[in-house]
Length: 485
Ligand SMILES: [Fe+2]
Image 1 (cartoon, rainbow, N blue to C red):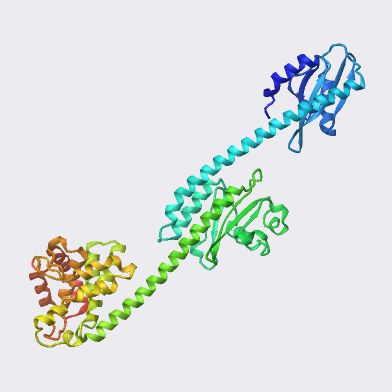
Image 2: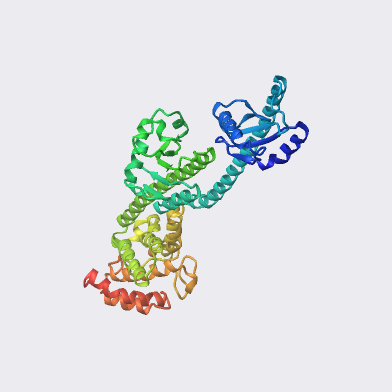
């Protein structure tokens, strides 16, 4: 508390009242001015009595008179404000005068207390404000991360680490029942048996706690609830918020601390609630995305089965083209995400044939111009069939352009060289090899070495020579897997 602030005021008061003022702590030690010489012991005794009895008290000693009131700080006695007759020989004062002095002391002390209370409030407000700014900063760092669709355990762990450092907690953790890969706990100090302690914390949350209606639970002192008190010999506080989206419950985000000098603030609860809402939204999206992906895989499998059922000569073609493409990808050291895009394009490159009449697909002789025009529409048909499936968006280019020719003159756009999308150029090599190497309506399969020679001869005209070179390197493994056909 700031006593110095009152020095000038008390000095002025001394001039007009004839009393000398001092402030002592509850043990009687002087905090502001010591009083007349030789009176220290008397003043100390009076200060201790005032603090103990929390009331106005006075005492006379030869040549002096002392009176004082307690100074309150919140509900605690912080000390006393004492007036003395300034050693002016006024040892005895009348009752009326004592009453007036008490009134004066009470009003001065209330003024001081009020000033401290305002000071305390301002300090608290600026502390809260500083914390709020920190929370906003944390939120601004986290929000873009957790809005992405690619929710992962690593991301959640990072988020929990951020919460630990920003909210100055001792432990922060997530608990997803049935999904242990999303259970994380980080601590700023070591604790024996932490995972078990956290499990028990959640188990002790009373199901009828009213705050659960708002999806949170807060405990500022474990000693107030026996079930929690039994979990650890030291008192602790615990805050947990449910991760829940549109009524679907996923788990909890929680924090705990053994630092009992502070309590959980409203702003901390609000921050934790908004982060949990974000996490829940992302988990829902990730689940929907997973479902969508599974749905797309099912659709793709049925589409491939449907084409192969129609085109008897190309049975297994999609799968083989996929295999060759992935061998080329591995030879190139392609990263997993891109490999997956190529994989879907390869599996689905001929999916547009689903819209081509069977009599054209399986015609044994040469196709006439009109029939050839219809066959040539299959890349575009495939592109249009798959366009609505978002997870396949990146694979569409490879499907649309797999019949372009490196030297130009292919279809559907007549692109040339590196204007042809990279994946389409890879599929073209694999597709050409498999087409020559398998039976067709109009001719029978050629030996793989012969097929390979044809592929090599097409480098630069029909096929990208760089990719053909990579394919040649992968060729021995193709031979050994397919055997001598
Ligand atoms: Fe094709």
